[in-house]
Length: 134
Image 1 (cartoon, helix red, strand yellow):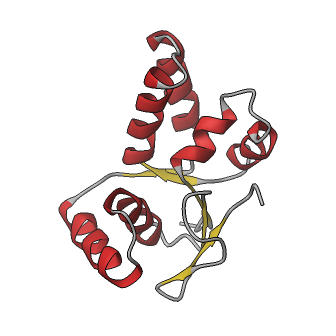
Image 2 (cartoon, helix red, strand yellow):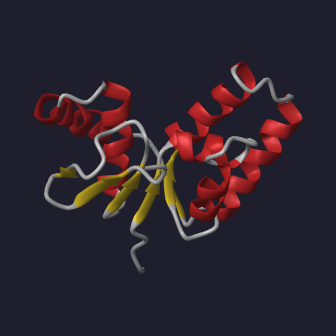
């Protein structure tokens, strides 16, 4: 099974469904092969509902579209929680950011697209954080 290098953080998904100035960049990333986690889908649904005030039907459609476009959706499990705790200790990540990074590592991704973490940071010697909006 081939590896897809790109892991998308929730903010990329959110911008892809807005009229924000970052939408075009986010849509380009969503249009290329990518990996995400179930946590990303859940966070997207929460932000779409609470901040963007999208109706549930639109959120459901967006989740279905994202899920079809994703090369892989990494489910959360106990081992990822343990990995995330180690990442919190090593990199001082917020716990939920560390969970997303743990999912990217589990999927063997090499690029983690997000505006939430330090651009250029290399995690565990193999996953590079990239802020696509810089």
